[in-house]
Length: 263
Ligand code: PEP
Ligand code: MN
Image 1 (tube, rainbow, N blue to C red):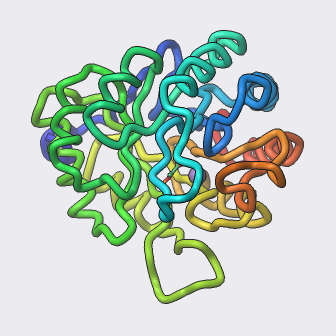
Image 2 (cartoon, helix red, strand yellow; image 1 turned 180 degrees about the vertical axis):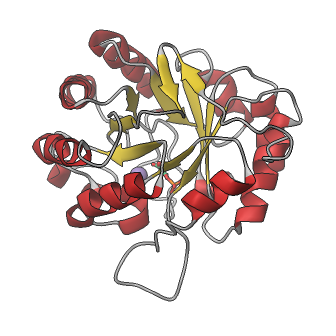
């Protein structure tokens, strides 16, 4: 179902009135994690002014350490929903299991399946039974074939609103958090009709690399970017080192305009 043979034309997914796929580059931005109403209102307003079309914010955080901040869960969903409505932006959050999926579906416009759950097949099937658009991130060590098969699990249940997201893969290199596999963009476009985003934040782990990798992603044909932006990255409870200051996000967006047909 996800293959280019199954459908020749590029799929365009709409989240409220925002199109992902097609001519323009869709910008999804916001903090790694929802921390407070003040943080999210500020983030929402600033990313919207810079040109973001969808607001992100993690409310269920799959952290490497069980002692790290795990997310505000339902309280975070309420905050994300309020901030999104305040700024007039649709919202997206990650779901990690069936209860978080059930809860998040009541508050957000789009779901995200994170790298760590790319092959959580029961979760994929459950998301497939909803009719919400979903961002499916590439697994930490997943091949493109495995990633497209994960998308197939969702679509086989009837939900065809899938947006793939390259977020870097695990390699021997330790200078960056992950290794951004930009060749995934044209390869996925060859193999599938689904839109593909690039996440320059998790793929590099370093805010100073985000702008250049964003431009490279757009030049490679990405349909959009998923970028972590925090009002005060140095105080972030999660992923501060890779989060852009709102002003840097604005500059980064401006630098995309000569490359993209429309941002
Ligand atoms: C995230 O987007 O905050 C996240 C946890 O990403 P990933 O699943 O790609 O690590
Ligand atoms: Mn993050």
